[in-house]
Image (cartoon, rainbow, N blue to C red):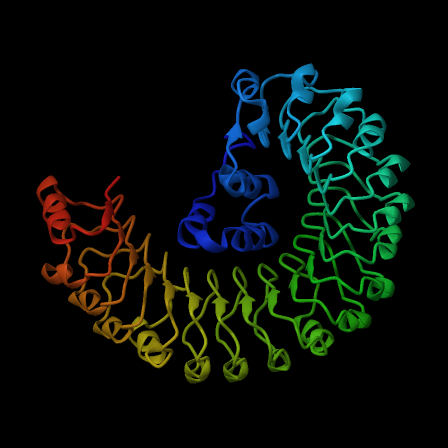
Length: 474
């Protein structure tokens, strides 16, 4: 495939394990900074909604009526082949990573074209491009990342049917007022640009549902942001914000907000300002040098996902147990010493990441979690665990256990009591054998044992004990 190489192991993990909700999870990974939009696009378009993706002109011209998706990425093209108009049913065109300057005049004949990727075409003449794309009545998605643009021409107003616009990794610092003519624009991605100030012009694009300013230099948001009445997802990861406007609480449609790596923000104030948004489901406040979680976290009663990785937390407040709808809690890379008793009040919690918290007492942690009957995924990577305590067997409902990069020389028999487990990751430990009763894990489908100390004989024995599972030794 084109669209660049995907080098993020965690991205593949989500794809493999949430295939039916692939788009949702990839969008989520993009927004929290674990994946780039084009990486996600590569994975999503590999199946192309059941369409066959033609990857060269010779192949496509042999069956022009069947061509709905055409991938001409990274082929050193300086112009689009003239035969492109032969594909009357073309809906998706990938031209990523070429050297195209101008689009052909007759591209307007592709009346069914809905998506076009022109990212990484650094010689592209933008005014001319918008003029020609404006003649495509069905064009919904346009990707223009990595083209070194420092401004957008007024001709952007011609893209009247556009719903998704990706302008990642350019040099933009403002957006022209003409963007208000894009009455159907729902998603705007401005990752990795040069925005110091929120573009006033965007306040008139009241159709926006997703707004992504990941990795810019924003210092503040305007109080008038409430004009974006349809806004559901706001990504402000890796900016320079020192506060949020009080009016942000009036964004009643907001479902997700990402504030990772804005260390000047005061978490207590953030919680108070977001408290009036009843529908808020996702909050990311990772990598903000946070030393404690304020009691006001309890104001966010409807939160379903909370991300607090890479802070300096020593403990979690009892009030965290009041978040009765919480399903996902990521608190890896902190300095936690214990979990509060109230964590067992999180009856809906199904995904917990405690990785890189080496001071935790794991026997007590597993005891605390035994009443969380919805807990399906637990990550305890990089915690200097030398051996699982017996209390691991209390977590009988687990389906996934990730414990890579620890210091285990022996795997406790307790793991054989996890009768619902489907995936176990024990990569990068010091294991030389697995428990004799590992064959009891009848539901196990994947076992990762890469970078351990198993002999060939031990490997064959493990495979024989788990014939139903895919076992990765390398």
